[in-house]
Image 1 (cartoon, each protein chain N blue to C red):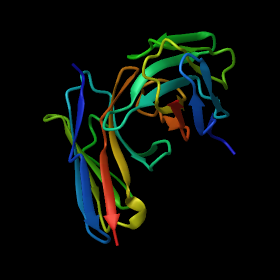
Image 2 (cartoon, each protein chain N blue to C red; image 1 turned 90 degrees about the horizontal axis):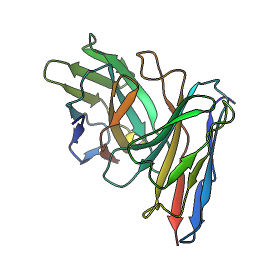
Image 3 (cartoon, rainbow over the protein chains, first blue to last red; image 1 turned 45 degrees about the horizontal axis):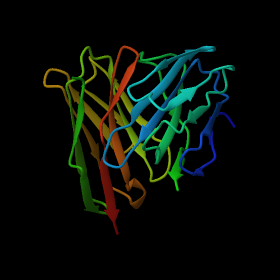
Image 4 (cartoon, rainbow over the protein chains, first blue to last red; image 1 turned 60 degrees about the vertical axis):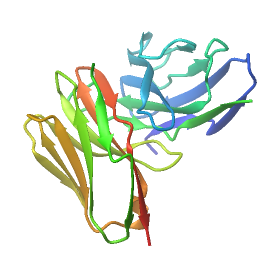
Length: 115
Length: 110
């Protein structure tokens, strides 16, 4: 099936640990995004990548890191520097950024909880 | 500041009834406006995409309108079903950026 897959669905992390969230797409999309969703707030952009080996910080990049070594994969690492990491994380991909015909497809999300 | 506001924050209706969700934005320059449906614990799914020149667009029982002059959009749901219970998110795109509204939480009761 074509689509965008996030794993795991639920993740628990101890304080002070780094953790990596996986995002894979087989849609041949160039652009990939990571968002954070908190209750009562709109999705906030963490990082995005328009092409392999290139990525840009979003609005709330502090405490996060990403890599884009392959077109299909855009993993997000939540580092110990992120002071409030408990949230729902969404990955998205699109053919190209922003244009009228660009459709953004979202993964099913990863719920990260710090214990 | 580019912002997207949605109202109401939450809404409860009975199955079979119609409802309208509102979206106001201050995003500029405007590229297009989208409505997404997000089921609890899932990723958002696109309902409609509208450009500056489009006033209305339908997708089954969902009809979105856009007034680019007043920077307002609405999503009308007709003959609601239990499966319509979800959050509805308005997203405004400018350039390469997506600005998300906080969403309206709709609950459809039998």
